[in-house]
Every structure is written in C-alpha cells, then in structure tokens.
Image (cartoon, rainbow, N blue to C red; front, side, top):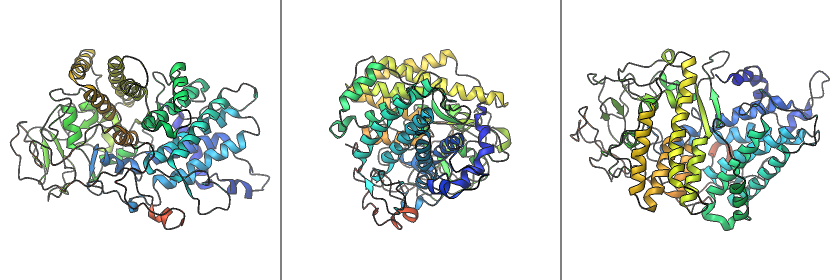
Length: 558
C-alpha cells in the first residue's frame, strides 16, 4: 500500500489550522517558530487538499457525477446542482483557501533559495488546479486571487487563464529541469504523487499541457501558438508512462483520522447517491434505457469491480423500489417516482472494489458494512489509460498521426490493468478479488474493436469517448469536460428509451417490473457551474452570478 499517506497524519492538523497564507507566515516572529514555511509541509498539505476538493463527500465529485450520469442523487436530480450546493466546505473554497494559496507560498519561498524542484512541482500543480476550475466554472479570479489587501478580486476570462497556465507549465518544466541548484531541497515522502521523482514530474507537466491543448483544440485561435506548442509536445512524446498515474491513494487507516476513500462512507446507513441505471446498462451491453447503446450485446468484464449488488435473485427488497435489473437495484435520473426515497439500504447496489475499495461482486449477494471492505482506492486525475484515450481522440480529430485503433485497444487494456492495481492493494488488506482473465480481456477488446471497425467517423469518436467515460468513473471532472467538448458519451434521455420510466424484471426481459415511474422533463444541460453564493457572489461585488448556465461560457465550449 502506498504508505506516503501516513505522513499526512503528523502534518494535517498543523497545516489545516495554519492555512499557510502569506499573512499567517508574516505575523509569527517567535524565535521558537519559523517565519518562513516548511516546504515539505506545504507540499503535502496542498496536494491532499487538492484531492479533497476534487473528490466525493462534501465536494463537487458527487454532484457533478449526476451531470455525466455516473450517479443519480436525489438532491441534485435532473441537473439540479445550483449556487447553494456549493457551501463553505466546497471545492471552490478548498481551492482558494488552502490549495492555491499554498502553491503560491511554495513558489514564493522556494525560488529565492533556488529550491526549484519544489517551485516546479508547485507551478505544475497550480496550473492543473486552475485548469480544473476554469473547465468547471469558466471565468474565475486568477491574476487577482492572491493580491494582499484585495478582498474583491475580479475574474479573468477563461481563455486568458488557459494561456497563462500553459506559460506557467513551461516555467515549471524549466524549474524541474534546472540543474544549477545542486544543493536544492528535494521532495521525498512529502510528495504524495511521485515521491520527488523529477523525471516523472516533467512527464506529468507535459501531460497536463497536452490536456489543456486537447481541451482547446476547437478554439486554437484563442491559444497563443497552439499548433507550435502541440507539435513540440507530440514530437517529444514524453508523457506519463505505465504505473505513473496522476492519482492519490486512499488507505484503510481510520485513526487518528479516516483516510479511506470518501465514497466508502456509503457502506453504512442510507445514502442518497445511487449508481445510474443508464451507466450500468451501458456497461452490461443492454438497451432497455439506452436504446442506441454503442456496446449493445457486449457485457463489460469490469462490471463486478464497478458495482456490488447486495441482492441475490431470490431476494425481495424490503420496501417498494423503482428500478430493478436482475440483482441491480437503483433509482432513475430525474425521477418523480414515489419509491425513489424508499429505504432499501441492504438491497441497493453499491460501488464496488474498483472505484472505492468496496466489495467485489461474486454474485452471492450480502449486505455491505464498513467492516467487510477496505476503502483502499485511488482518486484518479490523469491515468495512463486516460492518456491513451486522449491520444486516440487527437488522431481521430486529425490533429496528429497514429493508429487510433491500436491506441483505443491499448487504452481499454490499460484501464483493465488499472483495476488490477486496485485489486492488488486490496488483496494486501484481505479484501480479495480475482483478476480479469487474459481470455476475457481479449474477448471484450475484440468485441469493442469490431464495433469500432463497423462505425463511421463519428461512431468511432463516440466509442472512444464512451470508453474513456467508463474508465473515468469517480472522476467526473474530465467526463463533464469531454461531454461538452465532443458531445460524447450520448447521455440518458428519458424520452429516448425502449421502456421509458420502467425497470427490468429479474428474468431480464422487457416486461415491466411494476408501475411506470414518472420522470421530469430533462432540464437544459448546464455548460458550467454557478458560482458559490454564500462564499463568493454575495461577498464579492466583482463576481456577479451567472444568469444562464445552459449557454457556453467556457471559451473552448464550441
């Protein structure tokens, strides 16, 4: 298990209370306390809080998952995550209060002493964090976000921020590759991602830059020398490699603080986020509520790793239910049905071993508890598999040369290997699951490639982006951006189903399992998120609330 997380236990309280802002650092003049930051503490704290800001729990990871139809939460049903969904412990506040301030402090105090490895890492992560915020919110405070004494920073345009971030990445790479500071401090266990491995950080820097250029490929004129920057990256071909995923491993530690995957809390009590039947049917190759499933007739071997069904065929739910598909029990998107709030906590389908360190579904059922799984799983941001899908898209879009079919095959195979990496870590904690066999892997990939070979150009892009969407489960940030950029995957529409508003009975045929469920008319799709009300628009006169998020407000959304 990745034991670097343990270091955070000794640092978290100090980091959290300190806040690590410039003002905090300046006021303490005690000879027994430092007046300059400890770079290793700043780095570990800022990395941890960045992951928290992106993940599940009280952050946008859960709410945004409903926008890409991974989950169907009752509270945010039908794209209902409004301004008040972003309250004091939300992602926006974590980014601005802890993460970005700490990256700024690292840069400010590392550069004068030529601790350029720390500076390069901080610039790389600052660019990534801001790019995520731009992708989700659009125009946000950037140039004025950390100006001393300025309490009402004005937003910068999303295209200007992207240009500045690309330049920042280039600065960060220069710092990482600078060999002049022979005696510079070098990160170790305080770097949760790569343990201070500079070569890996350079490759991640290149990969994040590729990600920004990929996102802006339909808005090249808005990026200074887009083509030149892109050509140089592709020519160098120095991106993250196998086992160099940009991700944070949660552990099974529970004391002195709970370090398990944030969504693992769903293994106790009645939770309000349910696996989307649309997502499940897509992976099962079914067409009940996904009539034009691009993978119709192909069952994904990753299903028992993604989802854990607590029911057996002979089980009867405790209360009335809304959607049953064999052993799979859930609720619909945009539900207005009377059974959406029924308490079937011991029968509802849960997340499996892969996304959250839960249980592997061996088909025997059984209720889950916090004691019969581990919570060991990574929060993934950019994986090697996702890189393969990124390169496949770029080939299909005509931006670079290569064999898109081979890249797609490699992407799916690497996605399966990523599952195996989680299985390996859970095996060490006695949460066993088998590996997907070589035969099942080959059979599935061959079936997907057959669909790919038979598809037209748009159909090929849809297959690639849908595979990337499946792989990115529990990373809705990139799935949300990908959908707005490409239109894929084609999302669930209650008006386009074989049996709209019905579940599927345990025998698997198309007969209705019970009365039709009323579904809301689909709301207009949100092209960005509202700004937080309590922490931003009500306090900052330079940040008026958006009038309409159904229109494109991010510069690359074309």
